[in-house]
Amino acid sequence: MRFLVVLMFTFISAGCALKPEPAALLAMPEKPSLQKQRFVLEYYTDHAAPKVKSVQLPAHNVNRHQTVKIIADKTSVTDTLFTQITEALNTKQLKVTKGDEADYILSIHQLDLDFVNDTKYKLVTPKSADPLFKKVAAQHATQQCATIQAQVSMRLTHKASGDVVWFAKSAIDSASFHREPLLYSFEQQQAITNELEVATFIHQQNTEQARLARANKTISVPQYKTISRMTSLTKQQGPCSRTEVSALTPMMQYYLTSILIDKIKVQ
Image (cartoon, rainbow, N blue to C red; front, side, top):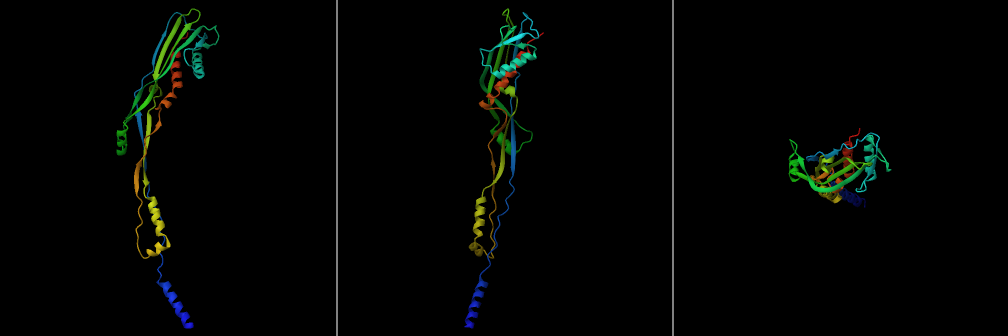
């Protein structure tokens, strides 16, 4: 009986000795350093000075501290613009009144905003440019932006006599008004394309069965593969769409009215 026990123990020990040790667990390979580049494209257009015509007649002198009533029933003058015109007249040392006793009537006859032909912006090409920059620049050499033409005209009339003592008109387009270059950007960045494939391989090779199967064997872990991807062109600066350009109109009207009122010669 004792002999049988010893014999069985010998067989079990031999079996354990014959079973191979499983291979070590595989670790995820280190990911490569991914490169990323950002490029900025600048576009410009020619700008025009505001068109201004101002005529003051000698029939009556406009003196400091005289009163002016603003009439704007033919145009859509906002409260903000009305306040701005009032402040511009005050700067000329003229007092704005709402009563009929005013010395002069300032009539705002025109306050027009019209979409006109789009403005073409041309790309500013740097002296030394990356090949990728040149490739994108060739595809986007120009940009077309919505454009608004703003026009303002007004007249100053001596109330007692009805004589016109001053009339003026000004105009400017939105591109010439804001004067900012358009800035667009795009990026080229590397991305790993087989990350799931590598992770799946490592997971499969780390099962107990796979570790025993590859005991005393050398296997190759798949290497990460990368691809370069380019983002779409994105605007960073400058109004271009109709909505963006329309947002400039209150400032354009204030600019034009301020230019005209500054032309009034006050003694």
